[in-house]
Length: 227
Image (cartoon, rainbow, N blue to C red; front, top):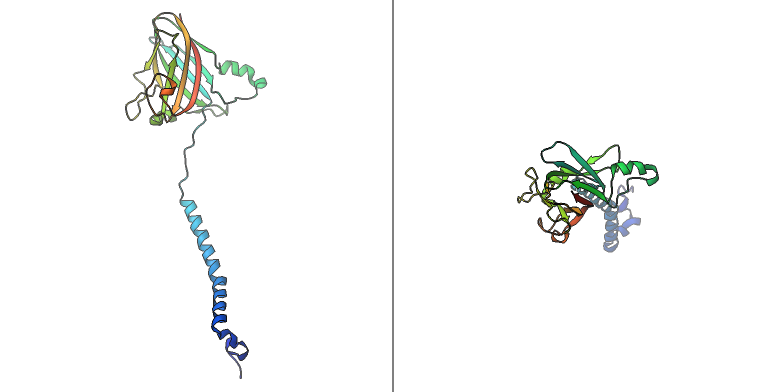
């Protein structure tokens, strides 16, 4: 007799044994089903990865701050540049002369006249690539709710005040950003001022750095001389 079905041959009747048959079926399922499950999981993970949102915004590094000071009633402006602490602009030996011209550093002196007012704008830059300097100021303005500029004035500067200018930017709650300010002098005085840019401050008003909370993105220091 010719056995057309391989498994009906008497020599293979053991396959019909219940326990062995169960193991045999389980083996077949492992051979064919397990790879299918693995492929399904792979496709599922790949799909989820493609659907995950990709952040298009990265916090920009601020390496340079510029104060532009213009006396009210005049058109002449003076710019003061500050290298942000913690950022190196290159080898000092190669760029010493350039840094003296472009980055006055921590001991910048700003000369003001007594009984005068000045319009002052603050700008933030990333100049790590000198051939592609990025202006971060607009980003700070667009995210006014998450930022705050603050000038801390020492007691020695009596009669000197800094207020928000009429063309300053307000956040969604109406708090001025202090990106544009008006400085007013009275008599002669001299003292230090520290400027800050806070990120996600816990308060938008205060008299000291501690009043604002949040993180400090920028800190610059300069001397104001009023004569």
